[in-house]
Amino acid sequence: MIVFFYDKTFEGLLTAIFDAYSRKVFPDKLLAEGDILPIFVDETYTVVTQEDRAARVWAALEKKMSRNACSSLTCAWLYDEAGADEIIFSYIRKMLNSKISIETNFGDEDVLRVNKMAHKVLKEQYYIKQFVRFQKAADDIFFATVSPTYNALPIAIPHFKDRFADQKWVIYDIKRHYGFYYDLHTAVEMTFDDDEHLLSGKLDEELMAQDEKLFQELWKGYFKSMTIKERINPKLHRQHMPRRFWKYLTEKQ
Image 1 (tube, rainbow, N blue to C red):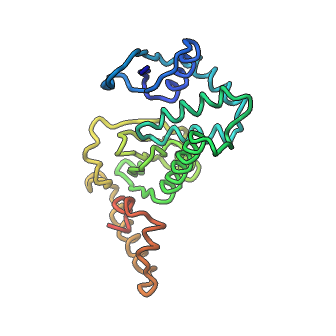
Image 2 (image 1 turned 30 degrees about the vertical axis):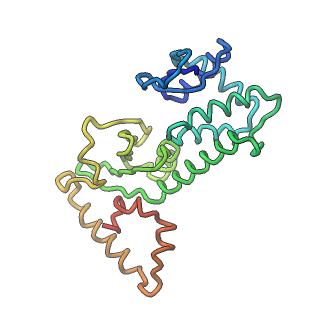
Image 3 (image 1 turned 135 degrees about the vertical axis):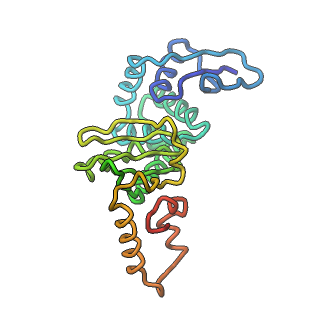
């Protein structure tokens, strides 16, 4: 078994592709630095991420794949579950080895799995857009927490930059311990040194703006007044608004 270690970034994966072709040695397993080696390893190699090598691989893919297929590939990378990077590695290798694009060859298991991963990430992005609830902090920055199944927050950020362009805001993924801060011009990735207090998804009252609590109560009242009890359908409600998002929704508190 041949094992490649890399930094678990997309650029790192593309560099691993470049190095594999250069060395004419392809990995059976992709691990992060520090991961425990499996039994019966014949060879290990540590990939050093290099932007120029990653760019060359990506340029080769862009020549062979459509724009939609390239977009799906980057979405699939955000699937963020164990083994997903190995599926993407195999997909890219098949793409580079083929004389024509294989992006629509859904009879190939890797092509089908990459497209399914991309679809799930995009669906999660739509959920983030629908169910983010901002809270106004005392410093006039609007704050929201999310905890998506897949790492879809980066591709949802352009929507919030456009929709809330005149407000400073932070959207924080408490599952992955990072978020984005928008300063009216650009959205910058950021982290908190201590984010344990954010697990509830609610700002402490002393951190809220003076009128935030009032607006929350008004929103709850509006939501309640618009509900028609005779037409409540819990099953359909959970289908359109998955229960895992409820703890972050003001109207569900």
